Image (cartoon, rainbow, N blue to C red; front, top):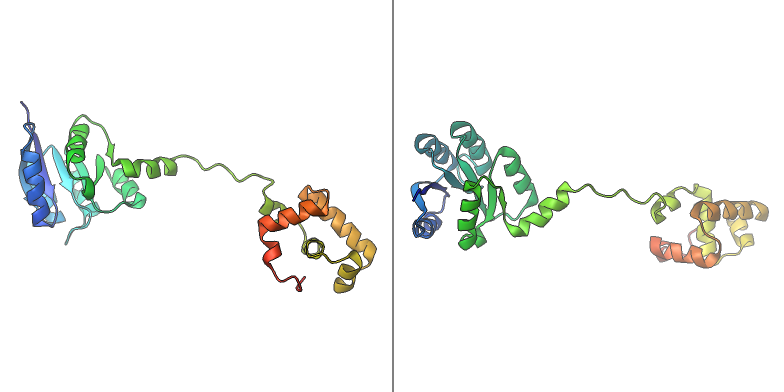
Length: 224
C-alpha cells in the first residue's frame, strides 16, 4: 500500500505529538517530519518533498501565509492543508488564493482531518463544513437593492418635500406646516402632492406606515 507522506508544521509540540499518533495509526499515512515554525516548514518541505503538509497559520518567525507562499515555490507538488483555530472567511480566502488545498479547524482535527488528507490527495479542495457556507455566500453575487426601496424613495424627495411629509406624519395641518416654513397653503399642497407621487403613496395612512419603517416617527415630533 502506498503511504501518504505528511509533514506537520505547528509551534505546539503537544499538538504535533497528538497529530502524529492519529496519522500513524492509519495504514495509508506516515509522518516524515515535524516543524515548529514557518521557516523550518518551508525548508523541510523542500528537502523531503512530502505529499501533504499540515500547516498552522499562526507560528513564530515566518507566519503560515508567508510559509505557504514559500512552500508553493519550493515544493510545488505538495498539497498544503491549513490546520488552524481561525474560523475566519478572510483567512480562508487568503490561503485558498495563495494555493492551499484545504482548510481544517483544529477543533475538528480527528476523523475529519483524515478525510481532508485523503480528499486533497485525490486532487480535491477540502473546506471545513462550518466555513463552506461563508465561502459560498461570499462567492455569490449580491442581489442589487430594489430600485423602489423605502430609503431610496425617501432620498428622492427634496429637502422641502421631506419637511412637509414629516409635518403630515406628525399630524400637523397644512396651515401649521405653511406657517412653520413661511409658505402658502397652496405651496404646501403642491409639495405634498409631489412627495406622494414620488413615494408611490395615496393617503396619510400609507405615509405613516412608510414613516414607521424608516424610523421617522421615532424623531422629535416638535422639530420639523
